[in-house]
Length: 555
Image 1 (cartoon, rainbow, N blue to C red):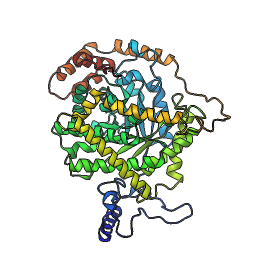
Image 2 (image 1 turned 90 degrees about the horizontal axis):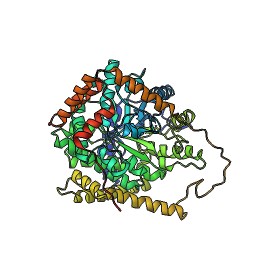
Image 3 (image 1 turned 45 degrees about the horizontal axis):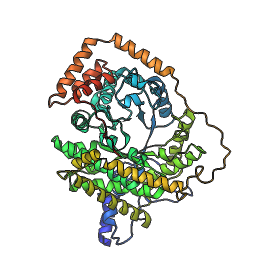
Image 4 (image 1 turned 90 degrees about the vertical axis):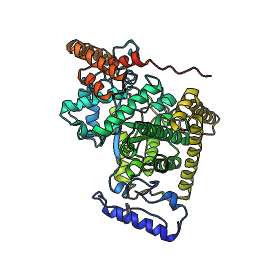
């Protein structure tokens, strides 16, 4: 851009900034120096077409002209363990200590669509998250927490839709109109086949359910985000930053194609898509990844999928610090790692953030470790003054070069994925890549390369392969009693005995009937949840109808 174009861009930004709401705070350095809300070139700069200004296409520098001067990121700590009552107590602690939203971790039986008394659930109930068997568990999970006022994220994909229905029923029982609900459901089934492996059915039935959910939310729950496209699990499986970026956005484009295939207006449903990224330990690479993600998404939504509004072009994302970067050796070093990763997410413009606890590599976080993780975010927000300036690293030669490099690598991967599909769409390429094991092999190769470098000492981890001397003492970690499973099963048996079984059977039969038609399945599934059909019963009815998916063996 020449100097005149740069000045015109600055004037546009200034007009939007002046008209936007700002926090009531002083924006100065610790020494009392005033700082500008954004910085940019004083004259011509050819990079500005790619970089832009905050709140302006291509949104490299952020979605809003004010940056965090308008609203700081949401502190959204991921939590769940034991039964709904125990997790409810943790949520109240998080909210009472200054958390701005909730994020639900479910146990493995729930993630797999099984009830707690399923024989395959033995020994797993409540151990990696909270056990949810029916809408009554959702009532307990959010007891005393007004669902009309608190945004709630739920990290679950395979049985995401029935879990959403139970959440809606819990809100109804609180007297909250469904249209007032705000939050995020993960629902991202593509990344399950690619990385996390928690699916129920073959891809097509899952995509049918996701399409139904997108339609329902677009018409009935406009503020709710029915899809959180997740790169976090792809990165935790061993991918590079470029692979995380590309695979995640490709999945997002696949869901855009799903919405368009349903006849939905991209400017209506695209704002309901959000993203979930990993913040790893390579500080500048992560910042560049987040900036590139916004730019790529905006360009593709506008130029490929026809989105006309800013909101439809915005990439909103939640970030979690890298669980895979935590070490069991010298675990207090994990506090430092988490702080660095969280700062990268903030400087990259995250909309919400979870910080991992120092003991999370060993067990679910203890209450004390969870508090330290929460305070890590609050120190960044309240003490470091990083909220004063939008995209403070914008224009850095290093950061901009990394942003461009990651964008170029992602575009090359998009081309490979589209070429794999028979019709050139991103969706067909993704499905073919899943079927052929291409995504898995790409991630496995990256993970192997990293592990080889670690074992050769080319990559160094403090406390693991360098600086290993320590005076650490064993940590006291959170342990979930097996009594939780026994009690959960006892309560579940009581609920089954006390409900109207005829109503449950009728609701499940109607749900299956709708599954055989072209109708939207959400209303029928809501009725099943209202009748206290369990998660396992709902999912088993659909397994009987659609079958289950087994990944082909690959060598």
